[in-house]
Every structure is written in structure tokens, then in C-alpha cells.
Length: 387
Image (cartoon, rainbow, N blue to C red):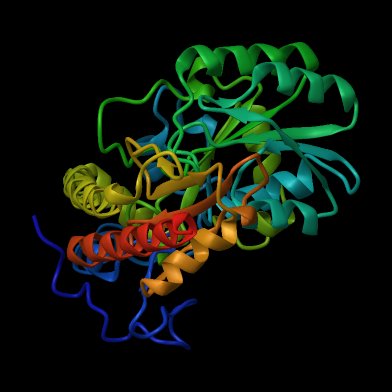
């Protein structure tokens, strides 16, 4: 399988897309797919098939909970009553922040986490409280301490246990169960943000927290933005039926029906035909090649001053330095003509950190960018050690 002919950069410009990378800079910042990886041709066919199958019903106000074909296709271990279709993860998080919380409530978040998601929570008037992480995700003891300290004021806790943004960490099943046990003891709802869970590049992932908990006390957020295209504005949440019903009664939904009715029916066609599974397998091959190219290019820089755990999936490499400041990492990237994300955007810890995305560039550019960064880093190290 290859990217469809319609997957091109011809219209990738300001005024059409949200962000355009600087000229002559390899941009490792974006958390979205390279244009050539978005299946425009496949989606064009899916939309046509949906319109042939459903006619004007595809153009109507959709069912408040979302189109039944998509809800059935994504229910997993649950059923349609466990699914609410949303306009992506941000839309779902907004619904949670405005329906299950009130201004001044506390949301427990990971020590490092998606910065714009935390901004959304703050904009809703909620108080964001970070909880310490280790190499396996949120520390259960720290989570318990935070739950106890803020007991009675917690709206929910937000976690990304699978291919975490920005660190790439996958929380082991035992740790997931420990966190769920703490949440149950203190009556804390867990919001499991699983935007990258389908992008498995190596091995297998543990069962989701919502499946472990049988949909009780957990709301899982899913999206097609990372596996197909963000322009679909299509995702869904999984929860117990009572929570799904409550969310579907939000005026934002009741006023216009399903958040993205036509896109829901088109993607349901992709799933039913097997085209989505084939696309996902191809996409993971492409992302694996890109991850390995970037990590391979960077390898010469790894050592006592710089470390990186190559993730088993998702979009990101997370570089850490216990000896150099964040500015040194950014300077090395700048010297190599590479743009990266400063780790302080996502949280604070004892080491300087930066995030590098491998989803937005071809392998050749990623290998060159990694090698350029490594050379700039080594040059800096030599200068510092020269009397």
C-alpha cells in the first residue's frame, strides 16, 4: 500500500492549514502526520461510499450519541451504549471539563503531559495539579498522596498510559491496576487519553484502563486524528452508559446532533470494509521507519550527557540531559537547522528535556536531522571540555 495520489502538499499553506513549517528547517515539532501519510484518496472513496449508502441521511443532523455504525465498530469490549462520538479528543475533554467539573475544581495530571490539554482545563477555570512520574508512568504513591490532599475537590485525573505524549512511555498493566485501585479508594474518575494507542510499532500494549475497569470509573478518549487525519475532527469517548447519556445531553450536542455525522459514516465504511485496518498496518510501517531513522541519526549523541528511550509506538522521542540546560539542547537543534519542542512546555523535572516528533517528515530528512543534531551536540561537548 502507498499513500493515495491526493495526499499532497500543494495546498499546505497558511490560510488553509493551522501551521506551516519554516522554510529550510526540518520541523520536528508538529504532533501530526506528514501530508503524504494522510489517506486523502482513501477518504474521498469512503465519503462517496457513505453518501451512496446513506443518501441524504448522511447530511442530516446525526444521532446525538453518534452514528450507530461507527459506535458499533469502535465499542471494543463494550457496546454502543458505552460510546459517544466527539469532534476529537479536545472536544471530549471540553465536555468533561464543563459537565463533570466546576470552576475551582482540581484536575490531577501527569508531571509531564499534553500542554494544550492542560491549557484547555485551565481555560475552563479548573486547577491543574501535576503528579510525579517515573519510568513507568504516574507514581501510584504520589497519586494517592495527591488524591488524599485534594479529596473532595477533584473533578477527575487525566492520564495518557499508552505511548504517552511527550515521553512515549507505556504504563504496564500492573501499574494501571494500581492506579485504578487508588482512584477507586478515593472516588476519583480517571480520564484515559488514548490518542496514540493504535500506533503500535513494536510488541503489544496492555489492556486499556477502561477495559480493566469494565467502563466503571474511567472515561477513555479516542481519536482518528493521529491514525487517519486531524481534519476529520472525529473521535469518541468510552464510558459507562450513564456517563455517555449525561454527556450526550450537553446543549452543544443536542443543538446540532452528532459532532461530525458525515465523517462518522465515512470512517465507519472504512472500518467495515477492512480498509482502516490495512491503512493502519501501512501507517505503522511508515512511522516505524521514521522513528528508526531519527533515532539512528541521533545515536552518536547518546551517552552520559544525553539519553533517550526509543518508544514502542506513537509519534515522539523524548531526549533528556541531566548535565546540560534545556537551552543547550535547543541551541544544538538550531545549529543543525532543526526545530524541536522545549520540554518545559509539558512539565518540569530534574533533567532538561526536549520532544522530537518523527511523524511529520520522511525518513531521509529525519536521519539527516538526527545526525545534524548529534554533530552539533558533540561539537558543543568538545568545546566545553577543551581547556
